Length: 321
Image: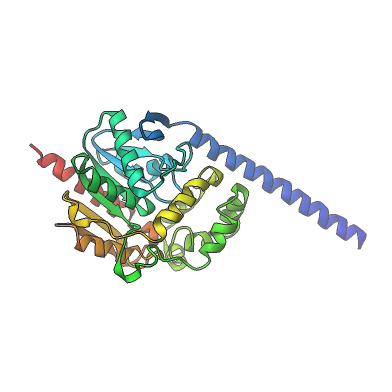
């Protein structure tokens, strides 16, 4: 019995050492990826981290929860090959952009304008994804002369159907928020041990959609999960997003006068389909693109989504005098 117990102890210890080595290697890569490739702009709105990639039509790509400039670049890969230049900031509390005293969506919109001033960009197409949608809308409402086109992708937005809670909370999300999105190792271990739980909660996507997806689409989702690391450098931003998106008011949508595209998915577990439909109905001339399945990360529709976005934002630019 003693020998068996000793063997079990040795096996467990060896497994723990291997796991820690793998974790350290993965986290080292994650930290290295966010340590380089971005710049800090000193602006009147405070320091703002950002990155710019590609050429062509400039697009301010405003990332969602758990992101940073790197998430913007990750999503933006589908646009770079379509003659779009991606300007990807880190929003308040993400990576190297600090949280100011006023971290509201309007203050974040003003910060977008401050960044564009530093970059010398007067007017730009804007895309707000998920929790990035509130500041995208506010930017086009409060800085209309700076906004040429607006795209809202699976947006956190007001809808009467669930006005008391802007984003529907997927089952078990609170557990993930409290115990996983607070620690680098906890998130890494969950990605390795139970990624389907994170797909359903963090990514708001039905597990049956994930299970039925192609190998390439599943690999892309796993890449998106790993891209949240190091989550310890995004925790402040997640807290800001939780406060901003929990009960969003109805914005003055009628003031948005630029061409607007909204995209969402009916089985998005965050309930953004209703948000997008309502918003599209109240912005003059807005176009609403809907997919029946794909969840919050639009699985199976990546090429279609980025093709729609690239075509839409280039159209008014080509037509401009």
